[in-house]
Image 1 (cartoon, rainbow, N blue to C red):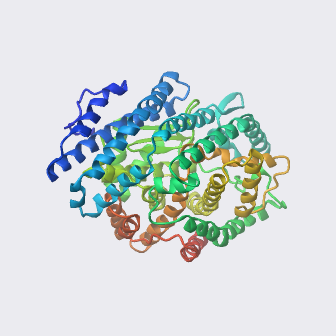
Image 2 (image 1 turned 180 degrees about the vertical axis):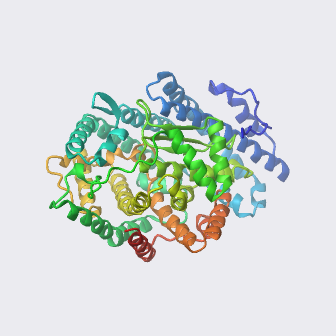
Image 3 (image 1 turned 120 degrees about the vertical axis):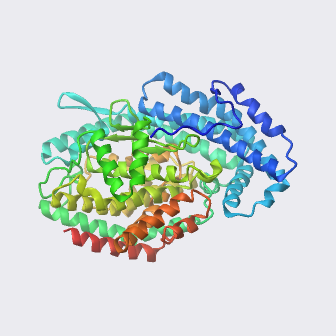
Length: 569
């Protein structure tokens, strides 16, 4: 089904953003409008919401097209133009709109939770805005774009062809050790070529972010970013407690799982190219060949959970809102980009036929379903989700979908192996999430640190959150710089612990589903329909899970995963 945009009521249908002058009349209208009644204030909110949706969707398409073809200079220029020419002009006027909002007495007439949360975000923006930060924000956006271009340009030559780093990584699961070692060393050589470039880029980002925070009256960028992200429901100390709980309850479990695999190899320690291969000699799981095959399977699979889920993906396919296969020149990673005006999001990923790709597709499908379920909320601000809520949707979908993975795996052994990989993967990713978050706290608390100090601190954290079962002799630099592969550090700072928080919530959703699947699914959908019209703890409560990432909760969920893993052996 093709979905059409709702008719615009404020902006012209023919608006094309080619210069700042195309937008200025709309801002002038909102800024100069007399608001003398609650109805006129409500209309002002609606018109601003429409403007927000159009602007965010225009930027979204520029980013999407650029990430699909990073070598296309015209597409890169279109994105750069928006973030360096349009956004700096927008920033002071958006601040002016926020201040006009703050001056209106009618805002106090809205007592519902949805408007309270939305209005709180506007108040926060007013508190944080500084005119001198506008050019810094523009520069930061421009620099963050460089990370995607550097990463997308990375590839290796193997077996007579040039392949992406994502596709090359699949060879690390092959049974032939000579193949694994050769590919690993090619990956290392290619990454080393960009190490200094990425270090320099990150240093510049850190310095600019620190200046941004100081300008806004903060001691460091971490404290600034916590407020900018709207982290009203937990503190930095909660993050530190999470790091500690991961070390206490999860790292030992991961080490136990890895030690069992190591014992099967007969070696004292893993070599770096042997950590991903199946120790029992089994070939890598390959649930599909092409992105199209993966998509068709996911549509059928998710349709078995709920036909509505399948309809969402089918609509996106029909509208061309999917780009799934890995190819040269494409930016790394995967995402679901919400498109607030039309309400039909876009999924971007780099599928190469691996089990991890299937999980990524289901993960992004969770985000997509979230966009569809919340698309009819009255204001764009109601749909602008905090990551703790957005990732609850996607990570829960990963686990809920396991019920239907038999579509891709008719062989019971392969099916159980895929499920085991999923649960073990959750245990493995939680220490990485904690490590990345702990790293960011240190980075921005010590903004004048040297590159050598940065490498040394990351190496220390790798010991704290690692198993110590891999021999990195000769490749120590790869430990010190492995953080460079984490896009979030460069493009969306401090957005990462949300994955850990949401993962615990998702495990709760899945635990509920094993007791009563229909009830768990219904609660999950009700939570997604809320968008951001309730507090984060209230949304989790609607999904029938606690907003809790304490040591006690981690201990409970770790025991639950252990039981489920034992049933798959």
